[in-house]
Length: 366
Image (tube, rainbow, N blue to C red; front, top):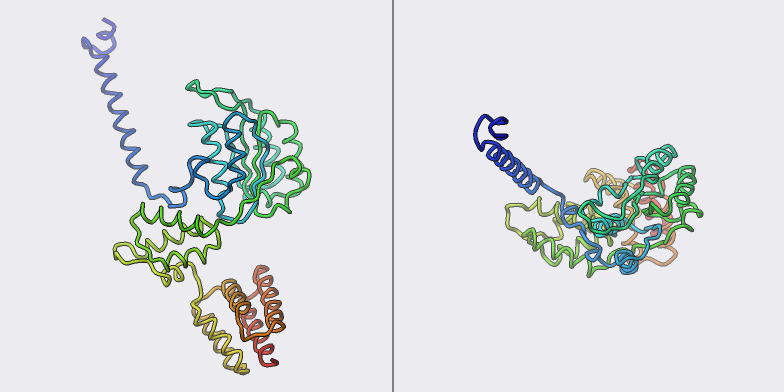
């Protein structure tokens, strides 16, 4: 009778409910298919989902595993070069600790964008004051605290760091902090003394090679051994940069069924071919300003980065057996000045001419 009053048909209620549920299931299935078809950067697709998947950072993994087994989690300070897994590690730990509700239990802030004292007073303090239950909605036990992740914390102002220190003191039981930075020297001492510090090392060649092999096999990418070597050399222990380079090269060669070689990696990563570097050094030995100016003009017309030229010249000069130690030291000192000037916004052409003329002067003097 109830079904008749609601729907006008005998037994219509259960049919309507079944129809609605089937429609909702179809919508969810379509949404899941669309999500799967959506292009995702390989860096995100192959980001570690569990703490056991994190590569090469044994000390911090051991500490986080103890926290997963029931020990209390200290405030953490992760520092080290970019692309070594700092953010991925704490996000993977949050997944293991809180399961499906990990997004509700973490507050992730990029301190490069939001680094003032107002953010600490409003967002961080407000989130830290919230209480957390010791169980998930499905009844499974989980730690009764939240995690605040401050990425690039070395960009925060000193005032914001001082305000953060007080918040860390007051809400230590209900909220754990994880500060992530590249330079630990830029974090004030009162904060570093309250955190367990872990240095993330640049990834070894074996780890990089293993990840590149795994991703290239999963994505069906053909890459030569020389191409892998070129990616490892250009990434310099940065796994994020290595994966991005591999994806860019795969897009460059998509549909050609051709192996990715070192030339493709150099083109994608902006590496200057060695013939240009050696040509500049050979021209400097001729002791002719006009020829030197032509060589620098050629480099600039090719569109090469001044910063990349400085880095490659440094490696070439240090390994050059034809130069004396005194000549190497004078050229390297000029390269250091030029890099600092470029970072401060100086003109690339003028800095390249300055480096080239100093090299010519040093080489000609013998």
